[in-house]
Length: 395
Image (cartoon, rainbow, N blue to C red):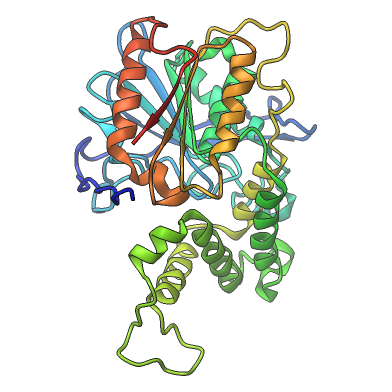
């Protein structure tokens, strides 16, 4: 039996105090063209950077966040002790070593953490967009990121990476702008959502829509649908964890010595889920949750769309999955690897043992650090000799 992985202790200040920056572009009459025909502008992107861009601007890494993430990937904000969501992976000596690399993380369009989304003010009405916000796709998120990278005067990224929806964005970069990126590290992700993944997203969307306070998306004057959004987040958290990790974290432990025999949160796992739901509504917009989950469902780079026939690609890939991840199971990452190897693309696939489920991409730090540090080192040296078409299983 595998032993439970030992988590590395978090360090709060490795990149020190950081500040969220903002870039606004696509002002009329040059609005951003969206994949399905709509246009939007102006567009604001919230972003943070860590490390220093080198003289030839060749050491930039774009980190893409998952569904509920934001631009705050590392370090701490002034007056706040909470580190960024991937703080254990970004910093001096870490997997994304800020003593060597210039790391960028931006909040996606459609989000609610500083970038333009449904809660932003519609320039034509002076009120929040709500459901007048156009549908966006993963490709639109990447196109907006490309505008930010242009603003930073970076011609070619050393690497694009991310887990879950962040991995989708990384793959979309390879499909949309292969000439702009030298390496891609998609983690715990897929070329397209399965029916089960779409079904989970539909359930969480309906949890929000069924809340009477959603008001067809026009809730900004009265407060958002907290019960529906909290329930959506509770469902999501169940899919992020594995059966074993929930057993190890909670088992059937009661919060008190005896059950209440009421519909209270008697079990620790019930209290945990309620707490996660209640805290989530304080920082995330319900309409953004609807738009972003739909964008994930529309995402589809299968069937040769990742690397179309006739296109020569020099981009390298390191694909990482986790054995206990049942939300984005390893077979989906293996499909990415098969697609790339069938096109003779430089690709390495690694499946890591973990009991954490989908959350493993945030928690399994040491092995990801080892893989990513080596991969980035050989990429930055322009070497393509590290097991180019091999497989690895790390125990």
